[in-house]
Amino acid sequence: MSEKVKYPALWTTLFTIISLAWVFPIALVVINSFKQKAYISRNAFSIPTGKAFVGLENYTRGIKRTNLIESFGWTVVVTVGAVGLILLCTSMCAWWIVRVNNRTAKSLYLLFLFNMIVPFQMVMFTLSKIADMLGLNTPWGLWIVYLGFGAGLAVFIFTGVVKGIPQELEESAMIDGASVPRIFFQIVLPIMRPSVISVAILQAMWIWNDFLLPYLTLDMRRFKTMSIAIQYLKGGYGSVDMGAMMGCLVLAIIPIIVFYLICQKYIIKGVMAGAVKG
Amino acid sequence: MISMAGKAIRRWWALFALPTFAAFLIGFVVPFIMGLYLSFCKFSTVTDAKFTGIQNYIDAVSDKEFWHALVYTVLFTIVTTIVVNVAAFAIAYMLTKKFAGTNVFRSVFFMPNLIGGIILGYIWLLLLNGVLAHWGRSITYSGVYGFWGMVLLYCWQQIGYMMIIYISGLQALPGDVLEAAAVDGATSRQALFQVTIPLMMPSITVCSFLTVTNGFKMFDQNLALTNGAPSNSSELLALNIYRTFYGRAGFEGVGQAKAVVFFIIVALIAVIQNRLTTSKEVSA
Image (cartoon, rainbow over all chains, first blue to last red; front, top):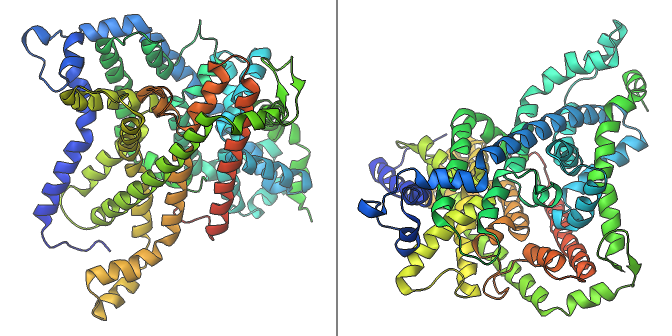
């Protein structure tokens, strides 16, 4: 139902200007990443020429000071593992809750709903202590922590999907002698595929960018995610090495933009699936 | 009533429900209950807790900085909710019309949303300090500067997200109603305010509450952009709680009590939303 506007060229121009303003903060970081650090705080808007231009020095220093490559690796390990575990376990759990549908299942479901409205600050201290005691202060331990704290939204979305799947399909497969796990993995899970992708995107966006949970849970001497590594550049009350900071920011943004360009369609769908979250 | 399939599936609880439930106990249920209990205790780790009744809550509400952070957060939430939703709706409204480049514009507006709060904070630190340097000031000059800095940052981040939800809402509008309005001689302004916006109320409710809860819970951006400076005057509630816990020894109990208050406020907002949203499948 998209209707025509009166002056399409005018609107295109207007939105082009707004869009340029929108990407300006990022462009500014990219420009400054090639500047010598003293020039960054003195004049952020100058173009790096002559003495101010340092090539890729900020990048190499930034990578060295923050161990950024290593943190990138840990962020990938945490995100991929946690998202994978969440998808597998919560989709199974959601199916079990909907199909069993007795009092236990219903109270379990209510607990998961409750989880969605609790802010992280409420559990941050106790959760980080428990994770420490159980030895979950590693990237793979964090998979379990994320499965626990992030289960609510995933279970909520998946139960909504399972409720829409007709049960007759599963019953006839059962009469044909298929086992319960086989029914789930060969019949139910393929039907749930679109929502699995949406949940994967939603959880990946959250976990990749999360700061406080990994910061309080992980063993900081051994593992840092990218957000933590960048925050560590600032440290204490000392002045920040703005040069290294700019280099690290650009390097942290690049994977996100690449991911966005590849998966844009799925990301939009994921956002819409998450719009029910309150 | 339980179906035949249900009976068979129930026996498989150890495989299907237990892993999630076990992790849920570790990652949520136990920490939540312990947190609730510890808010009535004096402690520095979870093992040395001594019950002190409601002393922590008394200390929490008599803390001036807590009230400052609360008011600051409420103001922040009100301002950003209005700006984000008006701007996102306006942009979505225009970008569902026909002119060149709408798809590119949508992608651009949405992009900041994917970047993490810490990184966003430092991006805007550069930009805002660069601008303020003209007057020899910085973002940590006063709490008011920090406030508007965070408003700008948060709007920049959230507008694209809400725009996506509004666009899908606008695209799902029944075309015949709008046509009927046009046939009846409604101007496009009348159609917008009398037809489109009333029909869009479900999306507007969802987006408003998303902005309210996200704004209320904002932490990373606050930490990176101002870190509460100068002297805790730009502290949002989440940061205030965090710093009560980890910034002052002996105040862990007070921090936990503040966290419980924080949880109750956020939960109330969510419950009100649930009441107001008649249909959950608004934009899915």
